[in-house]
Image (cartoon, rainbow, N blue to C red; front, side, top):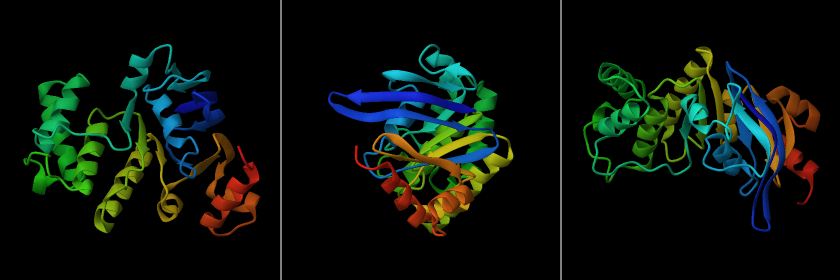
Length: 242
């Protein structure tokens, strides 16, 4: 479970995150939405311990991400936006390398890598060096890398970016399987169809603040909009200017 409690983060005079709070429970898919510059990626970076909040706190399975960042990292698998791969390693080697960094034994590494290669349909390019991969191929390998240690909590920043229709469908199936297995899944997206198809709960951020936090049906009811995209726009308007 992921808990965010009143976090603030500024970069100079820019107040990127202003008192954001929400819960992402186990066994559910929580969507983090907002326009560009709303504070989504900053919030996610605090959760996977790349940034420290100026105020407030965040916990992963009850572990404070600032006080014990190493223990918190062991509980999460993260796909940052634009995550890089080692270009001279193959897809399989990139995944295996990360597995070893996470402390998996050699036998466990081989088993997990093979499982994820099949699950994410990486077979065709698993033994090619990642230099020259398409965006979709890079994204698939990065997702496999984030899942290789079977983390309880999965944080994905725009995971379908660059994926074609078939790859996006495969990704959705993977995310739903994680939910069914009791994992906590938190992801950001700009694709409303994806959000409507996957999310149990949605947190909409605007101007660094939570505009609304509810189930998809709850958001439609509170905004008076049947269409989720219209509800998204209405929720942002409710926050007003920064």
